[in-house]
Image: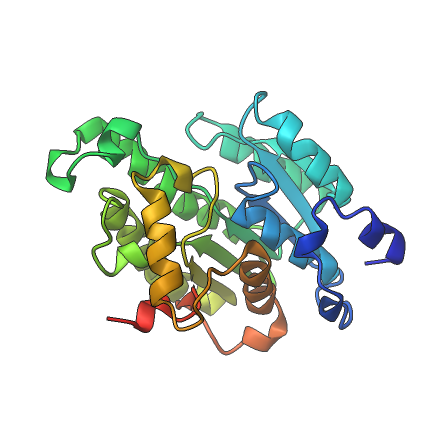
Length: 275
């Protein structure tokens, strides 16, 4: 990343001069799904991947989201900026066909989207509606598997798939509710996809950040209490930020993680280790 781009970084606090260790991802091309605004985990990943030299494609959910996402994508010199609603039939296929025409290949994918209807998210797991459960699984889990399938044909020389999980996939977290089973399914999907795609040189990971004040997280009931609990209980005695998640994502995409696949990596200040 040159000095001019650094100067115009849309969220300077995500930038760290220590990241300028070379172009370890130069020439690699990746799709980043899930940026809603400058606080999104996906944005932290995009900044770091771009800082290390990767070429990126960025998506936005719909016309309402575009004014919030496009300026961030343009500031990062994204090669492609595309609309993508995984609930809309054909959107995924159109996005990957655009990548095929523009790049001819894909080296990495970052999937950072999740959704559950509010009434189901705020209710008990055993009370979740069939429709709400299906929608949460479709957006938060199945969409990753579908992206993996579409990416497979573009990763002829191998690649990396990364999705975002949360501690509630493994342990019961108050008010996380239906997203716990959904994220558990997502982490299991990572392991199975890693096994199936491993012979093709495609590695698959989940990153599990601690609680972060993102737009998606704001839908969780009593989220402020969850934030305070994390600060008090984590060995680091603080929250992590999207830049720290982004650095781990860049590590996984880079060659240093070549001996790893199928793992869930926690980036939560050690919170998951505390009983």
